[in-house]
Length: 301
Image (tube, helix red, strand yellow):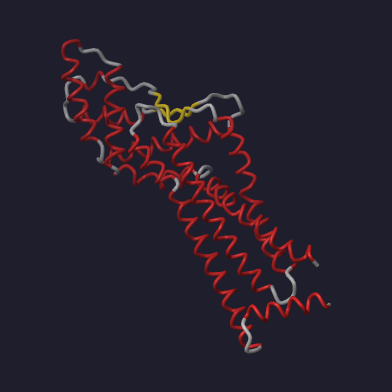
């Protein structure tokens, strides 16, 4: 009898632990594997001022590394910098931004899917944006625009000695995306079915509470990951831009945490309220009195 009383609690504790794992696994499967969805998620960042400033600054810097105009170098840098800042926000820029995000997505996916020991950084090629900027400068008749080289320009997105750990985690999440939701459903069903007769509504309410706890754990994981992600940015990458990118990329997970928490709370309140009302109808005693009598009856059996 003691085992039967404890087992539902153990199963629901596992539910609370698996909820954030399942949420991250499904998000990873949807966002990381689907290029089109990822590009659509990141597209609004083309309008973000911090991101525009970071892209314009980096473009200017990389372009100036590849040209030498002697005494005209400083003037050309100012001209190209102004052009890069005005280019940000235009329709060609938005198209180039989507192109870069498609390349970025592929870079991360390839880096995570690679074998262990395949490097410690994720790189992005800025050549598509450089090509768009060069064409706009030429169309505007800017001097020397034709001399801007369009070559592969690597931008380090992430550099960390933990990339192999990320690869292992990514492989685990790909597998977990299908089995964790099934496991959670089975654990909840098992906890309710195995509950002592008369306690299945409280068990269902506890299951809702387990989802609320899982949502809180997911929010905590996101907060820790936020700090880790920003701390791993290279020094020459704008922290404000990194903040905007991280917030946009993980927006779906934050929304999921809210929905899991609210859904679990709704189930807990509905099941707990139903049990309370039912106990009131059985007799004039309180639900806790009814629960005690049901315990005594269960032990007598």
